[in-house]
Length: 284
Image (cartoon, rainbow, N blue to C red; front, side, top):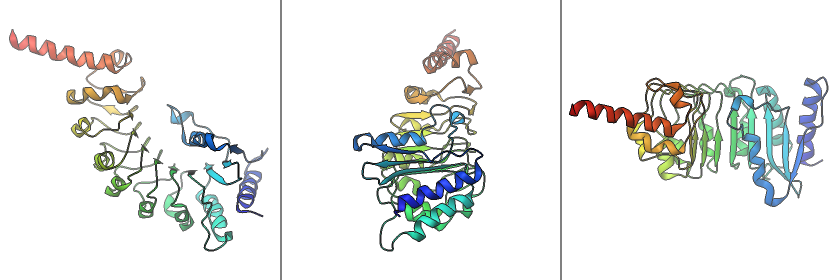
């Protein structure tokens, strides 16, 4: 039995145990030129609340090598059992699923502090999701995941990030959705300046404003900020509005909601009109 066969058997065993009407574990085979589609298993679209997977799934290539593994709403005990079994039953001196690029783990609210050290054996992956793990700080072992291109930490309790995040030179996407940030982490400019960070998602936190440094150091493709209780948006940051993604779930205390719903161009025009009125008042 191959490592992949053992993994499928483990996941199917769990499905049979917890579901009244278990279905076979989804296995998607991708042609080499279609491997980028595996990223969809970490894509929650514009609304992460709409993400409702039905269970685990695997992406494999034409050679039957594992490319991506997602385990959603697993207990830490179940995640540990799967990871430990894979590692312990693999042949010594051989990489664990060397073609694996993506690992998406979504817990059921238990603390990641209890997760097995076996996870460290997968430090070669490029895409990692640690969702709903009661994270209030990042574990030190994550520093070894130097090849990460995408890191998703949704639905945790983070308020800060360690400086070493800025050392992830290949990191392109960082999602901090649904955490407890009241300001953007100080390490973000470093990640942008010395790395390749292009997308920063910090929806549904506690941001009240955006820092001035964003004018110089900002993700080049997208900044999502929905669901934060903004008090104001600094006029020095208005030039960034083109990269900011938002819906009517954005609230800015000093801007009427009907203006926000018209889009960022309307917000920019609103601030400009206020500035114009102020200038006219001074001249009068």
